[in-house]
Image (cartoon, rainbow, N blue to C red; front, side):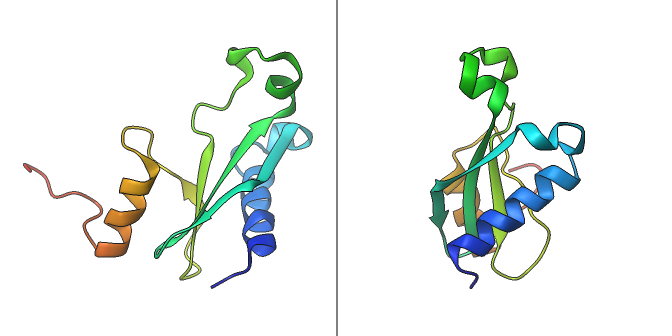
Length: 101
């Protein structure tokens, strides 16, 4: 299990070198939002433009990242269910959901 500071660094690296590489200077990872679960950590982020203006159009659509304990890829948490439910499903092996259920 990685310590919180490594989780925050991994999240920042993912964002700044992947989906937000064109806005790397705008990315603000929020260490105080980091929560540890059995499957891994979640950590939220925001963009400076949203934080400075409050303009919801500048807010990330999916502001929660998942940093798995097993070292697999950092990824966005799904937006259609609560994050704690997703983390519980990942830990129990119930993710991805089976079709038709």
